[in-house]
Amino acid sequence: MAKRERVMRMSVEQPLWRALTAYRVLTMLYAVGLFATAYDEFVRPWVAVAYYAVLCGWTLATLPRVANAARCTKRFLAADLTIAVTGILLTTVADAHERVQAGGPTLPSIWTAGSVLAFAIKGGWRWAALASSLVAVANLVERGSPARDTVHNVILVCIASVAIGYVVEVARASERTLARALEIEAATRERERLARDIHDSVLQVLAMVQRRGAVIGGEAAELGRMAGEQEVALRTLVSGGLVPVSRVSEDAAEGALVRAVEEEPEPGGPVDLRALLAPYAGALVSLAEPGAPVPLAPAAAREVAAAVGAALDNVRRHAGEDARAWILVEDEPDEVIVTVRDDGPGIPEGRLVQAEGEGRLGVALSIRGRLRDLGGSAELISVPGQGTEVELKVPKDVADTRGKAEQR
Image 1 (cartoon, rainbow, N blue to C red):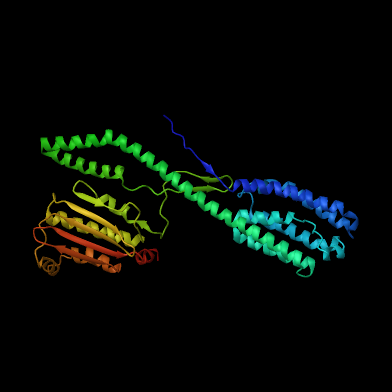
Image 2 (tube, rainbow, N blue to C red):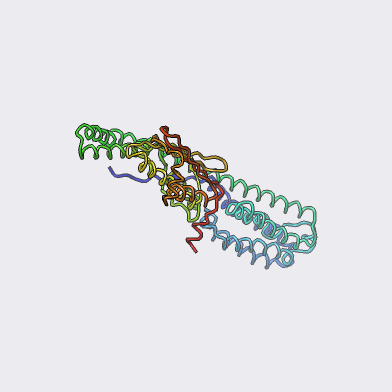
């Protein structure tokens, strides 16, 4: 059966663009109508006629530009605001001085607010504040003094545009959150479906191979042991495991796109320690981890994972191939704690000091040295006959100095 990718688009800001399109057309007609009713009062009506010709042509020609955020470019916004500001300043040239001082409308009138609102919808409240400030300066220059009605109109446009810009930013953040939630839900359903299929087929086959291999013995026993390890690793993955980090891509023209895709970690960004420790889990090694990511700097995460690997190597070397081990990951507010425990015979007292004297520096360098370089610590607790426990602690704010040094 062929599979199709279902793409769901969401955009709460799209109605704002449609409303802005209608607003620009209606306010253009309103501005032209105001001029027509007061034509005889203009001292240079031909200046106003020329400006309205440009205004009407620009408004109608750029309607597709205000259809969505993708087409509303910065260059268009700058040109649109320039036309609005030019119209405000030309009012003193085309209209009578008495009408200007009496608070008469500017040539673009309330069409100017459409330019400011485009800034707000496109870039949020900061862009809106910048555009409204430029319009305010133009209005004050046109009147020559901060008259009461001018200040009132300027403040009204500024507050309205900034408020709309803020609402747009909140709406976009809500879209991203909703898209992420829907994506996680879809990924969870798919994982559950795969878990059911794997449980009914692959896991049962691996379990049968393990049992039959143990009964037959010889090379079949080794094959059964390997099948058992793969069964445990696969069961851990499908029952909880690590969910691949997904990304919500955004189409500024038509809203957010919800797609389940795997995201590569950003260079230098934190990595999930769980992903580095997961390969150690098997039939004889159990991994207990938090349900949420455990972020660490890349170099720190690699060093901790290497220290865990060194501890497990010591378990196999000194406690035997059949010894069981447990890895516990704890995500504390200021540090990450990883504990490796085994059920081996333990380490006799003084054995570590003797090993260092003989030049065997596995614990000293591979474990303690790694954590010391990260500003952390490694504590080894062993009681003869009761196994060994290695507790690794690394601070969360450790700098990725090793990664930077490699880059240099």
